[in-house]
Image (cartoon, rainbow, N blue to C red; front, side, top):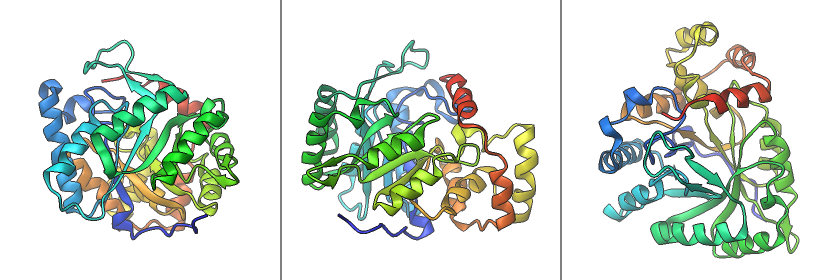
Length: 323
């Protein structure tokens, strides 16, 4: 069993997730302003490559995709192939959702969940065809306590075989019971060895409920990846109530709201990576400033006061429109 991972320096602990730019539609706020007109495949490819170039130039080394993020794996693979000198890059991707949006913002169904062995076999082959040996971490996408990925022993054997090839096997968690799903995953073993070695979960000042379970996963030797650190834009473009809480911290630190939210995650003792979900290079620059923000105990207490009941947070998220 590997030893407990040591967090990288702050500037390398920020990664770039491609959920918002690998496809034309997503639930992040402000997309009409942020994305290229028309959002055609070529325009979004250029946007992703620009973001990857800028992120890499500023020290970002972890890049996160998924089968359901439209063409995110394809765009990332093209970028990796364009320059063979991408030292230190970590690539994570996810399986378990199939993209069904047909490159349309107004698709009736954007993605379909399936954690079966057949879905894993199909999607691993698709990921391998695009990313090849660049794949470092492969995660079951959006595991909840009732997911068969937590109980299917045939699937567990398949995942253990992938781990034996040197790929870190993990899961991402979603929903108000993230902690329960994470703890169930920590209990899964194959031949006496823990199966899931990375955990990607939503954590932000509005939804910190997974924090205790993430600390347990960290202590168990898992690499922790934080997603949705700005709550799909709610903490970057706050409403009046949130702004009243964030404004004094912004004034005292000189930081933007998004940087404050991501800094709150970086101040936790367990993340290996905190993902930026930037859709523009300007947003990325602002997100990366989180690494330089020092929050006082008083700041962290004020941010902790923003926490919503998990069911309320996830109900609000479920109502965000795909735009």
